[in-house]
Image (cartoon, rainbow, N blue to C red; front, side, top):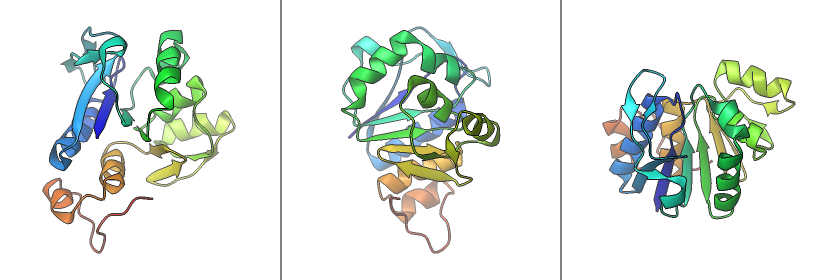
Length: 181
């Protein structure tokens, strides 16, 4: 199973790093990619160089879009929209970080009930989406989350992660063994 983590200008480094660590612990092949291979500065100021550009990235079964400062703009970018159109049918799951629902909304791939962090929930409601105040919401293959630890939990749930992995990450919830949806 391959998981691609899309980096955008001003991405949330904590979300990207946590998902990459979750994938490592679960034995999933994960990689970062972006519109181009040039370095990107995250919201906290760290500079990351994606492993692949759109044109050179391997196929993936799951896509993770960490939240960030440029979600709306990137969702409207014609190059990004073209890549998303080409990749969409091959994806089994799409995970959205803190405000990444705005990215999919702008790109035209968001439907049904959604969740996000507070400011993004307001913007999504203004666009007419049915917004749910929940840690995560599945609609078809898209899992919107409030981001950060909820994004990590969504990937763990999707892979039915054992309690040991959750405990290692400090995400073990009493009485919960993990289940998808």
